[in-house]
Length: 130
Image 1 (cartoon, rainbow, N blue to C red):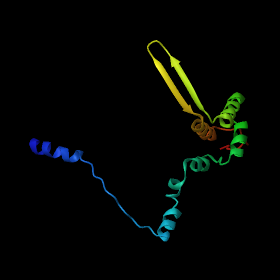
Image 2: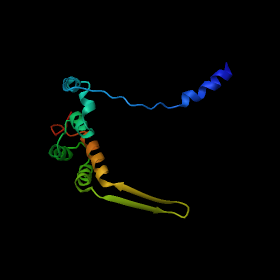
Image 3: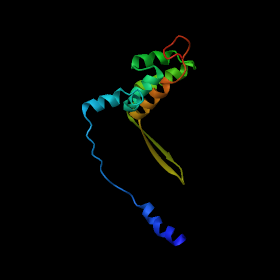
Image 4: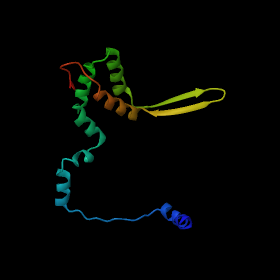
């Protein structure tokens, strides 16, 4: 049995490539997009975060940052990061045995901070209060 399985093993490592061409008419597209289980999959990440966090606009986010149930300094720091980030940040660390260079794209970091801030708890009565 072992020689047979040994001979078949390379067949399992092969990859199959192919093309699948489907024609979907407008009626089928409307039926697919109307399905409530499919709708979240069709959203982009920003829309999905807005829908699940109840904070969809920048104005709502600014109000939410003012009403965070965290120390005021954290809300101010998040506000500065959201408003001012946009450029690349370069960081260099030099050590006799270790050299490290890192580049952080501020625009991407800004989106991450905005997304995380939308889920932070707020004081009672503030935007995003759950």
